[in-house]
Amino acid sequence: MSAETFQKVDEMKAAIEAEQPANLDELEQFRIKYLGSKNIIKGLFGEIRNIPNEQKKEYGQRVNAVKEAAETKYAALKNELETQAEEAAAQDMDLTAPGEPLDLGSRHPIAVTMNRIIRIFERIGFIVADDREIEDDWHNFTAMNTPEDHPARDMQDTFYLQGSMEMLLRTHTSSVQARVMKNAQPPIRIIAPGRVYRNETVSARSHCQFHQVEGLYVDEGVSFADLKQTLLYFAREMFGPDAKIRLRPSYFPFTEPSAEMDVYLGTETEKDYRLTKGTGWLEILGCGMVDPAVLDNCGIDSNKYTGFAFGMGIERQALRLYDIGDIRLFFENDVRFLKQFASTI
Image (cartoon, one colour):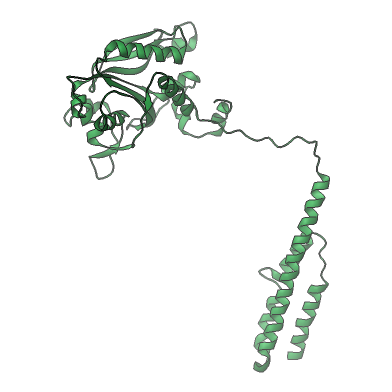
């Protein structure tokens, strides 16, 4: 019995050596037959229980040699046949055929709009300041003249961190202004772009996350006239050299006096009529003179220095700039939407 079993091993080794797969499909059949999960060599290993003890070692070595022969032949043929296939494909290749189209990457419309705003203010001496999005209550609210019992806190629904009423997702980038003023003395001239968060219902016109660019200028003798001229410069760079603006009284806890700025779009087109609700004017930002209490909170002498601040939503600018009707499109990462901006720089 053992002699017949040894003969089967020798016959299988000879069969492996005689196999000559001519292409990759035949080679795959060879692999399945001799090296697959249900290969026929496993049957030889199973026969070892019928081999006398004194011959088990020799038998095991012979069966292992059969398996190694199959593995060696498969590896050599695989390399050879793959090379042949690649050479045949290269010969059949039409070098005059057009190449596969490559999709171009693009900047997100929010990033494009933000960078455009940043460049406008950089040209008149503002530098970019950046800081954390997870902020403490003092820098986000108290430093901005909004103490715990201040009614203005009801103006912003806040995301607090779980288990803490002191740490939160910043509701505006004014917290960056507070940190800059705490660590530097005037003159200060910065813009603070970034993402902010408010617990608002997501709709076509609002979202729980959005972007702002806030500006701050603090120095001796800064006046409301400086603020107005700065914003007029911005409007004409952003909306065209003939842009008109108007400032309307408003209220913000960190500025006094405070104002909202509108830019005149007119009512000649249906789109502008709809955007401005028939008035021709579109609100684009809030602004005002920095409240002396804010300067004092941050360690700046309000008797010596004055300043102005402004803030605008990037999404609102981008919606108008690209004539987009739904703010949610900015956050859905739909390639069909983003492809429209592939040529935007």
